[in-house]
Image (cartoon, rainbow, N blue to C red; front, side, top):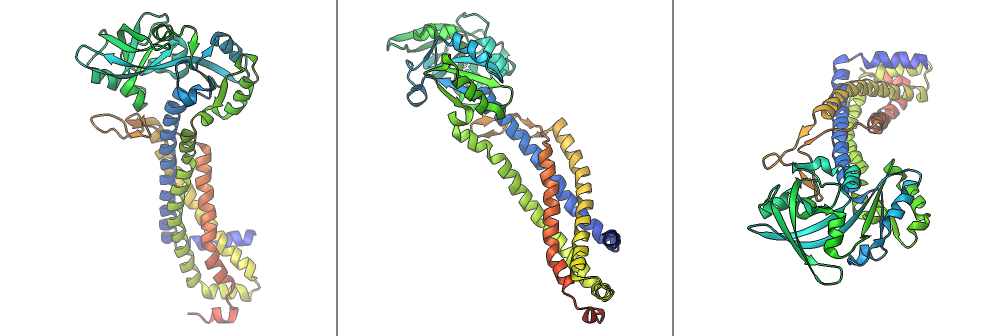
Length: 411
């Protein structure tokens, strides 16, 4: 084996310019794959935060009929006891209650439909970090006070701002007229297009009074230590006596479409790898075929000296793997630099005067930062070696079938 390695390494650098050009081309492919995967992972991480952590939670609890019918009366009672019990479940970190309704929101000049979201301000900010997404003004106070926070696009449509008054007109849980006057204390941009265009956050107590639904909520979101443990958290909550009669679902069960979209993350990475490494395979195939044709007499001499077809085939494959090693090292150096730049500075995708890209109802930050996952780098490098070895099989097989006498007659 030491003999084969020494000969393979010498042969690899016999035509150093060709080797360096091929290795550099493959290295650039590796670097671009690493950078693209890091950028894609950054985009998906941001989407996950907005769509899952901030909106779906890891586990959701509802009245069994609420997800299908969305009726005001399909609500949970005595959620204080339920949330106290959830806090004792292994892996549970935070929980937050929510109450939902729709109403007509009117400013001084215009009106628009709004989705009302009743929250416990302290719990909601701890779970979703929405207090850090306030563009103007402040988040809701800890106690009910007829305060309201509007989505940024809704506030723009209503031509209202912080300090203005907003009238809400709707229907309570008993079919009666519900209306009241609220003070706008903040304007938020969450990244969720639907909420930014029509969302209005109120203190849970204010919305319960508005809807005549004191003590009731439509949803309890729970976030655990790790989203990967959502199923175990679901099992623990389901076993609670206080959760009896409630519909308990993981985020992927509550929104299969989002789960399917998040599952496309690795699919996209493999498609990108396939495209780049297919080009790399052609480069390796071309290089190794040229090497075999140039060294037919040499291979004939090696066969005549007793080197068997299997060892000759191993020699050519080993040369290819050494080429892949050189290319991977170059790619890791270049790709590592690109990844660090993406993590630190990101890439600006701003459109329409500084707004971020919108995808699947999510408005991303204008500057998307990369996220480095070790498995992405490992898969990229491993794929280079696998593709290189496969591309070398044909030239290696051709070399192993040479007849010594005929090969040594080649000029």
